[in-house]
Length: 342
Ligand code: FES
Ligand SMILES: [Fe+2]
Image: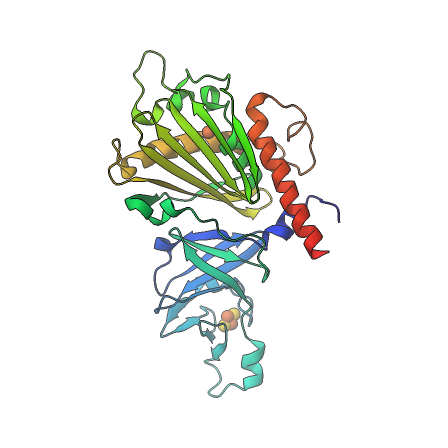
């Protein structure tokens, strides 16, 4: 089967995507999220059980994300129909004894849902194309501290955001006021390895200080290790000259073809000799805002799957090597799962 522009979403239904931060979905809470063009409601019952379903009540289509959870039941805000955590309809207030046939018909379609790294992840298809990757540092291994930043909505396709995160020659331009106008646009040699579940890149990273200033620890020269787990989880591990390390992860979760929500986390050892995670968030958010400005102003809003001008694979400079590696690997990922389904 050939890859077309609608192939990514068909295959991504088989992958786990974050839909909320765990801290934003308290017991008894319900949130709405659009994942891969599918409007979802995700509820947390009092015992912690999660339920992910379509955001449309089987009765009259009311958004279930406007409902609430109480006494072990998700209740629709319109006529009060109720569901248990497994999706079984267990109450229709206007009927004292609702017939089983009606309750059966009102069963919710549920989706796989799990929690990891402080995020709630949903998979729309029963089949799994790729697991959530294992990154022990983001689970506190070795005494690392982790901070989940506020997810940021981007009005662009998720592949534009991934390319931006892998791009090494935009610092001097897009981040002139944050990372430093003096950043070198001529790249040091990059070592890129294709892996079974993605790829990785190692390179020495030059200081990105502003002219005439002393670089802060986070702006100083370091060793950079970027790791992409297909389809869309990308980490950066920075190793500074004093041996300290810090990690970042970005997961641009696709809402529609033209929009995504970037879930991002920062992690570092408890004894990191530099700013606390909480103090890094405002700066990192300012950097991400500069990236968003660029991502939202590229046309088309999503990188076409076929190579072309303004997309990928045609006007290639050394700085685009990593983004091109992503696009090629992503196509390979799509092909593998198309072939498996054929
Ligand atoms: S629309 Fe939900 S109970 Fe009627
Ligand atoms: Fe950037």
